[in-house]
Length: 254
Image 1 (tube, rainbow, N blue to C red):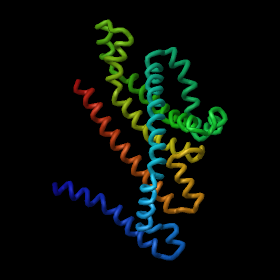
Image 2 (cartoon, one colour):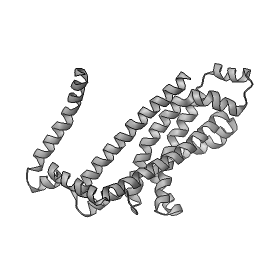
Image 3 (tube, rainbow, N blue to C red):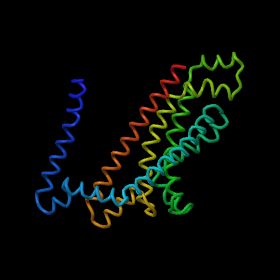
Image 4 (cartoon, rainbow, N blue to C red):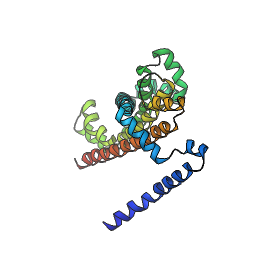
């Protein structure tokens, strides 16, 4: 218990030091007060955003887009990666095109996507899905190709069909790699969500809240949006990491 408290205390030293330095800097003149908004002013602004419901509207929109894009892109990525890993023909047909397109930075595709689907929620969701698609394809493909040969031989001995081999041998064997791919996809999906909201500024979202704060000269709103984004992203990463550990542990104990 004492050791755990010591770890928590040491981990809190740097954040507390930064907060103290920030508060001190906010009192060093008008220019500094604008850049380093005092902690009291930030608290008041946060209260206003919460009480008016504005923060929840933007937060709910971004979270919904991120999870929806992750689900669509991740599912498509797992299916595509599995298909490429198990079918030499699919690997030859899909592989070159996939590896060529993924070399193009996602932001470079946004003007093309804007012309195709406009700048509404459809475009934002597509950007997020593409961001989640790439890492899940790569990790699913690598995970299935690295399944031990003796496990495949067991499937042949048992005369399992291709679908039975995939479901009973390959997917469980590749699960750690797939989980890693989805973990990476979560981070990329969240980044793509903010990028899409900043570039396709229509509609609610944390990116829109950032832009609104910038346009109105509200440094407090901009800082609060950045802080909320960081805390939410960290919470999502921690939650998924725990879920991933349980999933992999459950698979390994079967």
